[in-house]
Length: 265
Image: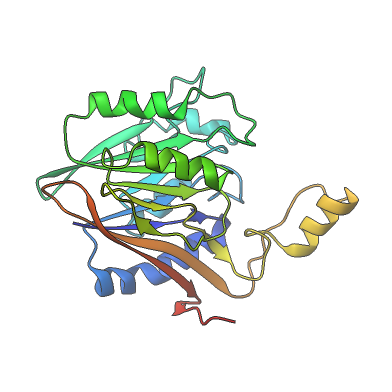
């Protein structure tokens, strides 16, 4: 089974970038299931109902979230309605929505799990290992894809090795920078520290550089801005999983700029 996973989608440019390239990627790779991290989809922070539907309508089967899952409190009104929208499974004191969802893909159960890391993160969460183990105790069999939303690459790698052979893939999100460590671990779990992002290419993790400079170094910018102009990048991975063993057989990174493969500088 083949799964296409998009890194953090940042703002309207990210949604448009994915919408533009997805038809060609569907034709090129013929994935059976498409996942995207959408926690930055609405102006870079959180996701609203309209943008969640836009992602779904462009061909994404499941949308995961992250530390900005509730930046827009309106999500409380619709997250349970959208059973393909998955918030972190280990957040505390939040009873809306679900931290994982299981889909039937051509007769094979495919579970998508979202979990928040702990290193350098501000959110109060339960243990990622305990929380995901609880999910696995509830899921009897099938493919399991974990979106590990965290800051620390070593924390993500440690988590992946812990669950090596127990889940199909551990795919890192949150830093918006695609890492060069995609591989299948010894017991058959695919891993990458961070899938990357989809959004403005000439940016600082999706945001207009000057607004980030002003905010970070001078403190005189009320917020970081997202430019609607310029090139757009798409970071994603293509994952192949054996539908009988539920273990990964390959993982491939994609880095597109305005729909074309990125050339090394």
